[in-house]
Length: 522
Image (cartoon, rainbow, N blue to C red; front, top):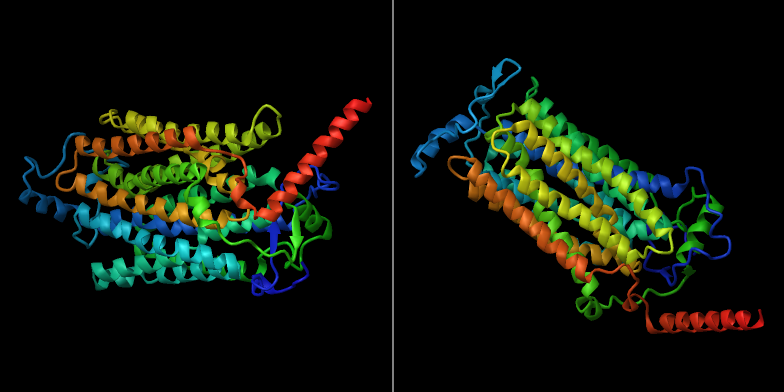
């Protein structure tokens, strides 16, 4: 491919097709060992994913400082609960200050209203998944991703003003932020398929998507600190909105659609990527096989695993700070730090397990299917068991935090499980598949804060939160079980058009005959 167009502007004119994945092509093993352009792209995508999750999680901590909990407690006297204030676990003294006497915010939003505020982001997020996934396949991914995230960051700066104007203004701004963030996952997935050789996908993909945990780890404690600072909770959105804008500018300037349109890439690295991906310049991309995708059990397995993960993950990510405030009585400052601990563990474990996955794939007795299922089972059964355990720890706050940290940490296995499985079963349509699964998974995810808000409404109690946690655990286990039964790590036949498939079959037959001839001669 000879096009030098920036960021895939002429992507629809000059396309390429992945026709084979063969790590043994002559010269493919001579991969550059230094920090190459593909590593820079991976790092920028990592920062982009971190930025995306900062934008969606900062509200979870900030809302604790925004809400007037004392006024809400008085309102709850109108409910049928026998007590207006939960005293199951008493009032913990933190740093010499009673946690429940911490300064209240200015907004009187009950938990169901808070649930709508937290979920409004995801309504916009799911709408743009599939359309941008399809359009980026034709026109390239860079501008959809970069400009979308720029919209997300700029509207993040408007959150404090919108909140002052009223709840519906705030919901509208968060909705638009979600619209802007919609392209991040499908476009990232498509860029990984173009830039990363198959034998590096587990660790590279896990590194990129671990940016979600890195962003959460940065966002939660810093949001807590900013919320109790002299600048108050609005500074949370001003600081992160500015950082997100800076990343978008750098991404649009320095990252290119593929190795062939990048003027900065070394020729050896470009050849290495080309050979390992089996790229043919100028070949027309086949049409999206919608019917075959709809009938594919491996695709449905990924979809169900993705939906189960998002419901459980969003339950914890959006509701954990509120749980720690209402039940465990942590201060806002400590809340941010402790809420981030599970995601720090998840980030570290995802990096570790990705190297384990790549090591397993290098062994002849581990297939892609076995590795994906095994690692994913750890990633989803682990947090399910932790949620069940945390439901019955009572007022032992440190045991609860420890169990959730270990459980959510194990959740990092999904990045070497179903999360990169799209690339296994269909490298050509990985972005489209991710758009489909991420859209439907986030529909499940947006229900999580709404469901939790309705269950906990009124006087918060351990019994109510136990229902929330056990529901998430059941969803985790059910969806993961389906994936273990029907998932696959093999490239599907519908990923190639008939001519390509016929050529590959003929090539395999020739190789088989040649091997038999050599064996007979010997």
